[in-house]
Amino acid sequence: MSRYLWIVPSLLFLSSCSKSDSTANKGEAPAVSTSTVEATKPCGVGLDVGPQTTVATVDGVAIPCSELFSLTSPMALARQAEFLEEIRSIHKQGLANLIDERLLQAAADEKKQSISEFVASTLSIQPTTPEEAKAFYDQAVAQGETLPPFEEITDDLIGFLNERKQKTELETFRATLRAKAEISTSLPVVMPPKFIVDATGPSQGTDTAAVTIVEFSDYQCGFCAKAESTVHKVLEEYGDRVRLVYRDYPLPNHTEAPKASEAAHCAGKQNKFWEMHDLLFQNQRTLGIDALKGYAATLDLNPEKFVACLDSGEMKPVVVASLQEGEKVGVNGTPAFFVNGRLLSGAQPFERFKEVIDHELAQAGKP
Image 1 (cartoon, rainbow, N blue to C red):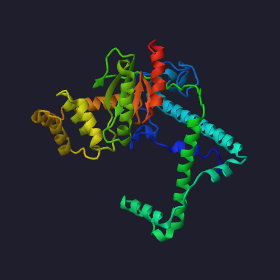
Image 2: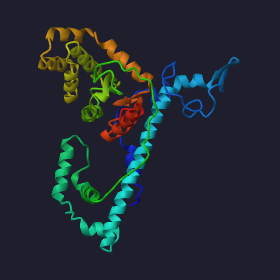
Image 3: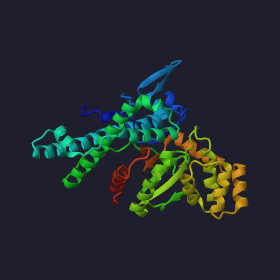
Image 4: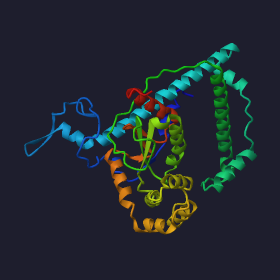
């Protein structure tokens, strides 16, 4: 097996819910007329010419590169940020694999074996039985998977389960080796490009915090729910040094998300935004109108006021304005976090937030 095969799954890994009918997916820039990004050199991302260089003429009138980039900068910078995160992930995973390889080699050398011989002699993996394969098969079918008859795929299924067991056991053993070793890493910290983002919306933390995180999220997005624990950890770890602002970005394919967003803001009128926010993420599979009204009852809201707010669409303009702000800065999926304007796309681990937050705190002289 090639030592580089891990690269392929790392590129396929998804950590965000994406827009199924996004203009970005069609290669079109959003209709934005003002630049929202810090200066780049020389004209903009992928534009290796000076800002005043003519990139087109219309009836003899020049269009300078700077005008083009003012239009395309949100989308270009957002894609650049995602690309940088992907490259960073490849390098980080590659380094982890190199470290594991060194540790395995050292352990194998002690027994005067090759790595493959050492692994084979160290790991105690019980072969998958036909009964285990059948149980796995039945569970997959019960969960809605469409599969060929069990008898036709028994051998392939047993092979797959054996390989999965081996990978699990090997990772457990690698973790044991890492725990015993003294390991330090010093990969350069990758900083995403910076945007100017309107931090308007329900917030936690003080207005004087050195770091403001603007989160664009969707109540029907599974990755957004997954990111909630990380967001809570960030707030706990950094206290009054960090402020969180929540902004709605309901995706087109999540039909119940817009009204769920409205429900949170209707609850906010009665000072229960965050309580409703948490409840919605805990009940992502049940976000119909009746369910939303039921959640309001559990939060001891005034039911008449909440229902009137939700049914009237009073909060729809708030949700739409938030969605438009997200489009303006190139958001193409959820969750999307702007840490002092630096885009972290997807359900990133706490360690990645820490890298960017610590950088921003150091820049502000408040480490």
